[in-house]
Image 1: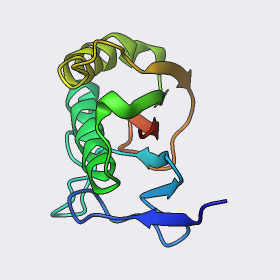
Image 2: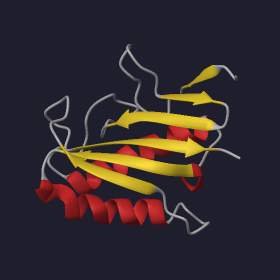
Image 3: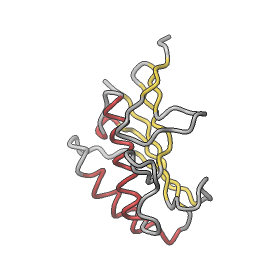
Image 4: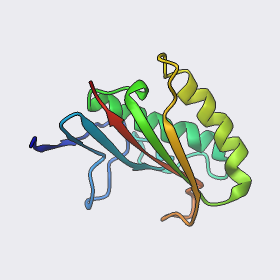
Length: 134
């Protein structure tokens, strides 16, 4: 068995002290759920705009994937958490644009979308990722 390795980058928001931005074990990389936090300021951005929040969240995920030696083409699963069904279409539009341009293999990741409460009031969307590296 291989050891777990913490994946960390300043190009994504610092995690809370109870979890890692990402963890790699062998060829599997799990990225923790990301919110629309600007990594430089540590502040939530795009309050009330789920489309812009989705893009920021995916940028944060991309930075952690990169730090772990992966790309979106290595992602096999994304889990999307939304606070309301009303945000599905704008989230999906931003998601399709972002992920579609970052999967040159043409094989899009699997995805689950769940409607739920999120930890902080400004969060309209949270996404986590699971990647398998060659």
